[in-house]
Amino acid sequence: MSPKTRAYLEKLYQLLERMPEDERLDAIREIESHIAEGVAGGQSEDAILARLGDPRVLAKAYRSEYIMEKGSARSFKDVMLMAGFYCSTGLLSIMVIPVLATIAYGFGFCSVLIFIAGLIRTFGVTWIQMNLGPGIEVPTEWSMLYSTIIGGIIGGIAYLSWRGLRTYMNFLSASYKKLLPSSRAA
Image (cartoon, rainbow, N blue to C red):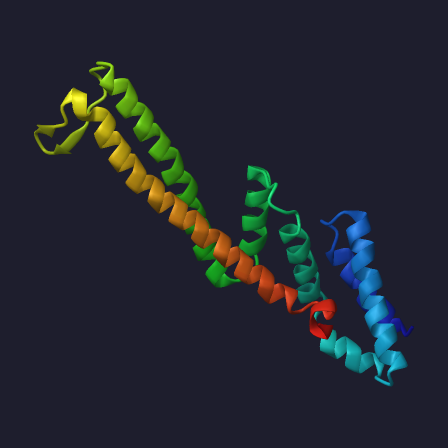
């Protein structure tokens, strides 16, 4: 292995510092194997390294794959880590992800609060006001229906924003996955 290849692998290893050690070593072994297969097939190490590209981009691809492979048992913290990672991937992501995440989680929380407020108001709590417009108050007996409809609309917007956020992050993940050597061979 040439010093240039060794330096490339060391740089890649350093860039994967946020991943668990076993995942980092697996990524390095995969790249080493890819380079060895290419050299055995008659390609130069320089050509293989050029095809692999910048180690920073390759490290992002491995981190993206690791983040997305955590499965469906994601906690709120995992989702926020994913959003933070993908926000660092480009200018469009810096705008799209925070907006969709804010709408999804903010509107979702608000829809629950609206439903609770309607439930409480139905039982005669007078300090919760519900208005259809200036001077048009919702009758107390209609509070639950009104809050269910409005909460449902706002909850629907939250759900659509959440689905859009997931779709966008899956798109980014698939884009990064194409950069991995294992994906190119398939």
